[in-house]
Amino acid sequence: MNDPYLKFVSSEWGQKLTRAVGLPQPWRLARWQAGQTHPVDGTLLLAGDALALAASAYAGELATEVLSWQADALPLQPWNPASGQLLKAVLFDASGIRQSHELKRLYECFQPLLRHLAPNARLVLLGRPPQALEAIEAQVSQRALEGFTRSLAKELRQGATAQLLYVAEQAQVHLEAALRFFLSAKSAYINGQVLSLRASTGAATVADWQRPLAGRKALVTGAARGIGAAIAETLARDGASVVLVDLPATQAELNGLALRLGGSSLALDITAADAPARLIDALPEGVDILVHNAGITRDKTVANMAAELWDPVIAVNLDAPRLLTEALFAAGSLRDDGRVVLLSSVSAIGGNRGQANYAASKAGLVGLAEALAPILAERGIGIAAVAPGFIETHMTEHMPFALRETGRRMNVLGQAGQPQDVAEAVAWLAQPVGGALNGQVLRVCGQSYLGA
Image (cartoon, rainbow, N blue to C red):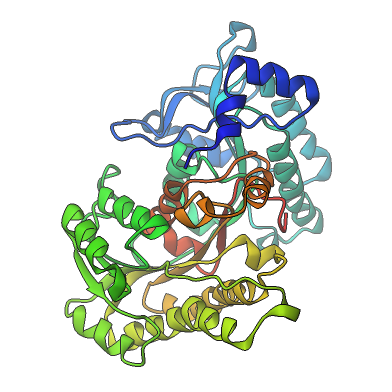
């Protein structure tokens, strides 16, 4: 969708005017393009201890150039700030910080380099899960990384982002996959997020990073258009064969997309009583990736909400994903080492006026991920939720102007996300790394002020 304000701010005259009057100046985000050979299209700087050292072994596959922070004993050429060389990505390993005075290393590294970041730079900090450490000061020091990262993310400019990954010792095998995502343009609309890579069962490696989902079958609900269609396209791009599900009214669009992607389609009302049985019958060989994208809104304040606006939202957004997942799991149609991704919302986290029914349904999906995580993990299946913020779709295109503009600007990046942003997150969680994120929520919202 066209964003006139973003287009205006991107012009020389627009930059001068908005700067003069103190208006927001969102930066046009660079997103992943077909044909890119490295996740980092530029210079990657490594800093820190053991995890940075481990990453240095494959860093040459991540970026076109890799340098080290001056004070670190990494087998790399040190970065010279005086050279004027801009950094496209920074990986700072803070996992060795065990005392509060050592937190100053964050300041000593980032304070000088922040003025040397290229546009759309990616910053990733690494830590150890605080609860896994014995010493109280070590737990405190590692927990402090979260406040630093979220604050740093709000200070960055020109489309740069920052994330924190807590990496359990048994989960280091998943670190490369995480870095390939968070250091790349695939994570363009993700900012200020904190995730934990945990030990998991099942596959942990990817044979072909250009097609990490090769040999996997994916089912996507609500796939005929918008975010669902973008998810289907991205999963197919990454090698998965796709089964597209949507309402019978969308049959023509559904069939056209399936034909273009080399997949299959199923017209189905997911709230129908026979939906689980029909889905199982349509998947005789089972499915590896299950994406619950279908969702509806019926917005009204609680005081003005009729009962008939409540039931369908809960039925489509919450009950159907739960019933279908449980049925496919019980029937064995959801294969071992599979992945389930639930489309939640930032409304589930921060609430939103006039969306009590929608927010309840989407918060319920977060609960579903948490509740099913240990059950599905017994067969190596990972489940996680993606919580989009304001995303440009046909639905938001028809919102009142003032409400649409507010939604676009109410995040640190100062703009709406694209369906591709959500799709990239879903495709990443569908990889083997998804097992290490079992039961967690990834916000794709530009670090929304809603619930921040």
